[in-house]
Image (cartoon, rainbow over all chains, first blue to last red; front, side, top):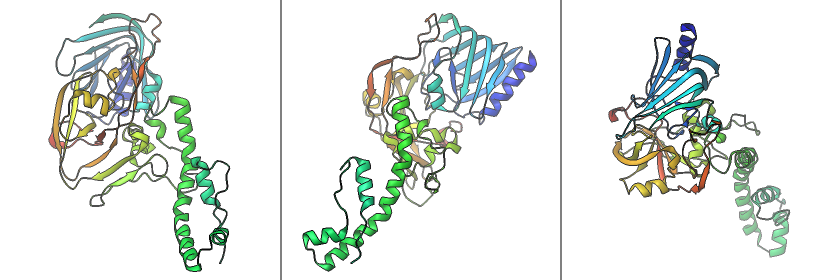
Length: 130
Length: 260
């Protein structure tokens, strides 16, 4: 399990140009924000058995439980997760929003064309606090 | 006088649909005979045509090469709705490599367009930066290394941060002007409640041009959709854009943002 998570972390680090680089996340909730001008990547790390991905100076956080690398190429990484939680706090203030999906996938890319083509990944919404 | 073959004119005009299937000019000799233009005048006209011939050849070649990409773009993904389809990964059919070179310091503004000179914003090798040309109307934009400071502003809020690559020159003219003029799709979740005004320092590479249109979406996919497969739905045509926008491949370090 840890090996799978570590593989995910390594793939994400390889995809990005480090903190501050544009990174589009396509989740079961779609693309958040403007795919041509996306949130900037903060970091990705393992927390226990989970993989935690942060963007936008901590405004957006994805927690992937039992994450596994599903696919990767030079411009994208696809990750499967038994449970996916997205927590986002609006820029400029406002209540935090949380979405949780099961049997989910996320696609990470810097290519807005790819993100617009995919638009949404699989996942079953089980919780929404907005 | 040696007759000048004007078939390239006909090819160019036919491509543009000006004289479909027609034959407007067949040679400078016939033109001279019909109009009885003096020898010196026809020579001058001939030289003019010859001078224009080289550029027309380039234009025609570019049209041929670019036409495939345009047709794919319009037929496949909707008109002018995406950026990356302008990225021309294949080699030029004429054997001449596409010109992806960026502007240089002291070189002044350089114009780029989707057909004959895609430029760095359509360079497949440039990753994120190379997917941005389609965000400009008709893929046309200008690149330059600034000689003077440039005041820009950016509306943000909600799902859109202040830290970003797209800015608008000058001082803010109001959120509605930004929404319509810069084609800020409501589906992106920009509340337009915050505005940053910054100065781009001299020496910074910028790309600017009219904002391309955006198809208005209703917002992110409906999260409560039990199938989980509902994509964003068109919600009322397009925002036409057209106002000047500035793309910054690298944000100035003094702005306090990170990287690009």
